[in-house]
Amino acid sequence: MEWFWNSVNMLNVSVSVVFLLLVLLSLVKARSASSKKLPPGPSGWPIVGNLFDLGDLPHQTLYKLKSKYGPVIWLQLGSINTMVVQNATAAAILFKKHDIAFCDRKAPDMLTAPDMLTVFDFNRGTLGMNTYGGYWRALRRICSMEFLVSKRMNETIDLRRRIKDNMVRWIEEDSAASRARGGTGEVQLSRFLFLMAFDIIGNLMLSRDLLDNKDPEGGEFFDSMNVMLEVLRTPNVADFLPFLKRIDPLGMKRSMIRNMAKTMRISSRFVQERIQKRKEGKVEGKKDFLDALLEYEGYGKDGPVRITEKNVNSVIMIFDRLQIH
Image 1 (spheres, rainbow, N blue to C red):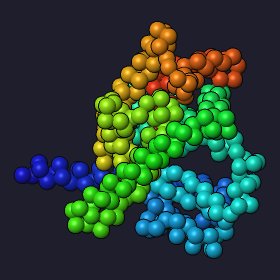
Image 2: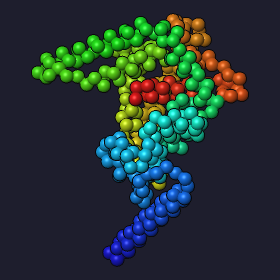
Image 3: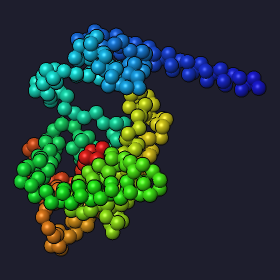
Image 4: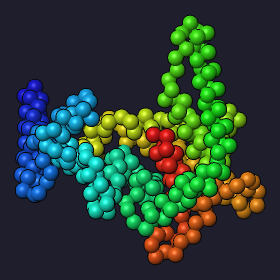
């Protein structure tokens, strides 16, 4: 038994040393950060920073901190430096004078981990996760032309009205079913708004009703996207404490990779089907967002010459996720 207790003692010593090193590292980083000219904010704890200071209602906590530290607050969320802006004047300065410095997106670890990049490479092909640059600007121009121009908006009035009417019908049916079971008839409105948004985006991007019972691939795509959204809604401690990334303590990265693979396969089938129809000249109706992505041609100076098929798959998937999130 002596060897067992020696092993336990060695393990305890190792854990203590690692913990002590992490504490010292966080203190050194805090001291170096304090020497810089940063906005005011509450002092944080070693390693976790201000994570536990936000409480169950972070928005209310931040509002209370505003009265003490001002409209611009500096927080340390684990190892993530975070600047909170709670004033219109400060926000205007941020977006008008310093927009380039702050325009890159902070994506969750489960979407930008090396495994995700190696297998899918999807963050470099999307609008929501890509770094600011020529490709991002080109993709934004396509999105603006396809979704935000008045002419395109007017062309989809009938489509949006039809999907809205479907949502109202679903709500009425769900409420009636609830009363038939002896319930109050109350419905979860957010669920139906989610379905409506998903259906609208599916029609605008792919010209297909993804929630139609006659489209099994659409239902499969919706289910896999829904699982991914549930994972993304769950707070991941590895986003704030990078030394936990390799461990993946909550198994969120593994779950995301599994569902991402399934969703990408379905998205790829949508794209392949459209490419084949375009080759055969069988595309019907007006051009949609997928057509715009496939037809894009750039000059290569400030953006891509073409959008690759792999990136088209990523854009479809992540755009659906961002719109219905």
